[in-house]
Amino acid sequence: MKTGKIIALSKNPIHNVSKQNHNELILLEGLGVEGDVHMGKTAKHRSRVAKNPLQPNLRQIHLIESELYEELKLKGFDIQPGQMGENITTSDLDLLKLPENTILKIGAQAEVLITGLRNPCNQLNGIQDGLMQAVIEKDSSGNLIRKAGIMGIVTKGGKVTLNDNIEVKFPSKPFVRLEKI
Image 1 (cartoon, rainbow, N blue to C red):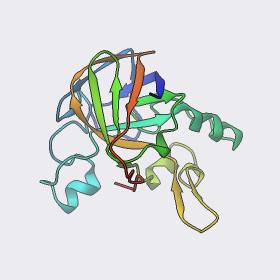
Image 2 (cartoon, helix red, strand yellow):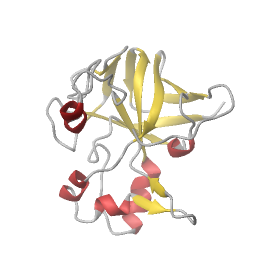
Image 3 (cartoon, rainbow, N blue to C red):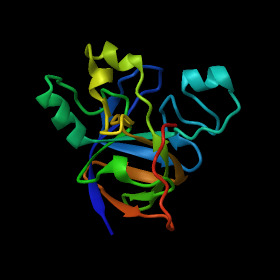
Image 4 (cartoon, helix red, strand yellow):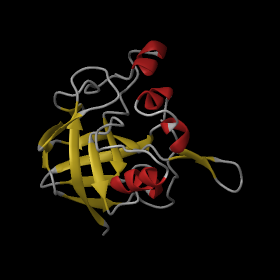
C-alpha cells in the first residue's frame, strides 16, 4: 500500500483563495474541514452555488502535493502551503495519478474519498501573476493537465495533524482517471 505524509494543514472561515496554516484539522464526516468556508453537504464554492446551491458538495476538501511547489519554484514562483487554497499539503504521493474513488486514510481514523481534480481558476493569478497558467500544461496529444490538486469528500471524520501518514486504498479495477470537478 502506498503511503505519504502531511506537511501542512490549512483552513479559512471566509471566501479567500489562501488559507491559514494550522497544526491540526478536524475532518467531519460528510461535511469537510471544521471551520473552513467550504465545509457542508451542499456546494460551497461560489461558482457552483451560483449554478445550483443544492448540488452535493464534492469539493469538501482540497489536497495539493508539495512537489508542485518545488516545480513552481523552478518557474520563478514563491508559493507556500495553503496559499493556493488547499486544506492538506502532502509529500511522497502523486495525487494527480490517483484514480477516482480512491480512499485516503489520513492519520489514525479520518478517510477522504477522492472525487476529482481541482479546476484552477483566475483567482490564482491574484496570488502571483501567471500562476494559473503555470499549473496547467498540455500533454503530447493536446489534453489539459491540471496540476492544482485534487478534491474529495470526508467519508470518516477524525483529527489530522502535521506529519500524519496518508495511506492509499485503491478502488476496484478498472480505474477511472480523475477529471475536473
